[in-house]
Length: 365
Image (cartoon, rainbow, N blue to C red):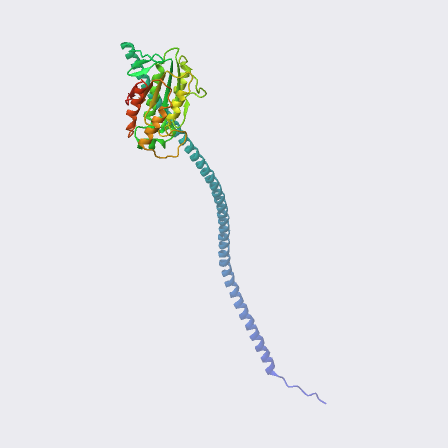
């Protein structure tokens, strides 16, 4: 039996060819595109790589600068701390120097005040020496004027004041009124430092008067110096009721030095002063009273803050009864403002006791 011939399919062969051609075209297109893409990509990548490298360099430079900045900041912080420490040290040193300077300023002021006081004392002493030398020169030229008075002892009359005697007692008023002649200035000076009170003109005049009186003591005579305010006490401690030798110049100089260091204060108790003279054994044959006003009290303390003229006059007459009998009282009065009873009362006392009375001028001795 004869085989049956299969008929050829021309269509299928053509389709495969078309598919192959199409596929080849796609591949060719893909290769062309890929080649173009690779070329473009390579170009872009090089530019980007170059830019990236530049950025990395800038980043590295920035990190380097940042590290340098951090180091600089740390260094500045350390320097700031060091500077703060140094500032604290300098401030402490300045405070210490200021305190030391203030101390030196105070010391300097104190030294200046002491020097000024010493200069004032030296000047006063020089003036006093000049007065004494002038007085001595005058006495040497004119000779001493002496007249005798019969009584408990020989008495010498110089410039109206009775001096001499074997036993002379000097009573010095050192109450607050000795700071000045006026009540207002007494109150003002009483509130000053003691160093200023000691420079009071009136008190220095009283001391100069005592110094002059002691220079008139004769060889071989005896003396005692008491000062009184609300109480009476000897100028030289430990000599209560004891007569001292006028021949001992050192002791006399010490008595004057003690008076110069004594500050006038408190009231005036004349009872105590006159009783001290009465208690001396043997009694004095000459009393010299340096005073400026009437008494204000008759005991060491008083309850009265204000006392009138009549009461002061009664205290004076009461104190007068304490005086030893038959002893002349020579009075040197340093006038006080407003105390009108003082001159006549003390003058009467001097006359009754056959003594002398002097109202001391501002420039004596």
